[in-house]
Image 1 (cartoon, rainbow, N blue to C red):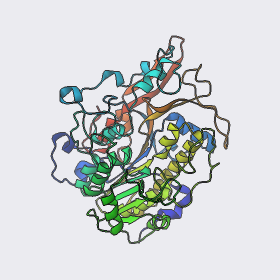
Image 2: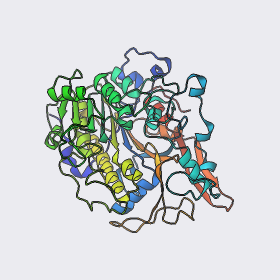
Image 3: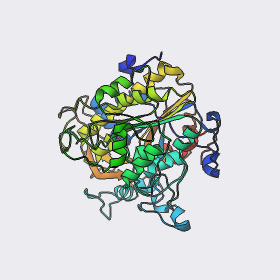
Image 4: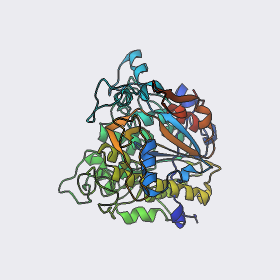
Length: 494
């Protein structure tokens, strides 16, 4: 009988199993290989807090009183920074060598990011105050191509789902893991076929906007054993049953087959919160599970209509009829860890990014707290040596896919000002400088076999001194493509 992590409710952690990089991805060889030849660790758990940068973590820590005291701040974890820049900001493939050529303007550059000269242009809703603000907005990646970098080791254009700059399919870590005999899964708090879960799950498409086609590949390609999230056609964002289904995330045929139990992917469909909860402790689990919570855009981020920017955390009651990210993560692990060859699991807090797009700090903090709880649950699962999975055979990576431009309250006049800590239970002082993504570095935390390689790969330096003698920078950093290298047994830092 398994030892189940729910016994450790106060010590939850997130496991994100990162991809398997190997010579397969370079040579195109597709013959099955043993897990030992293609993976750095038996298990890789890749945990993505979508949109999370340094100040996302800081704001949440200030509000909770846990600034610098999270599980991933512990001495057993390594910490580094990661650049997330795209191949180019265009959203369509380009034929020939031009499509594969890196746009030099988007490559992360400390002098451009931390530029304190007055801005000469404006991007987005908020006026740009400094040159660095303009540059980091103008060259930002999206949530698809950032994870493509992490799971293929190659850059691509914004909007791409595991295709290169020409639009050609690339081999993904999920596919390599599945070929090596591992059980593969994706879990998210937003639509299951959205950018991060679809890319992590090995789908391929020239555009993330081709949602039902992406979903069909996830369901039919045979790579995934667990898919969990939202996008349920039958329900709205408050769990109210629709008069007519909304098939914008999954086709009517795929949905009907899942509900009838006749889908060729042979998934068991669960929707009720009791079924999600039961899956975390079940001694016998289905071989393959699709869990679609009774919600459409997200589990919690979109509840009760619009998200007012002035909202404080939990001032709108949270839904009790949808699973938490912790519950989904533990349920996914309980299914996947039946495989003796190991697992690759991606766990995403997708609602963090959605709240940040709305410039809603209160819901951003809520969503990040939920993500942190999942990290704790995954850690407790490993601490308990559940099903023989522990820190000696499991690499856990906790990071963001990209940043948003969340800065301090006087950041119109003080460039890149830090947030103001007003104490636990109080909203920090802040100002949104954008409604979308930035090209800034994001933090990366790791623990387990190969975690120290992130420090080895972090051989670039983020440092800049402006004309006034002010210094800026995060220190050592690596690139997102090197996440793939670290996850792979044969990977090398660039």
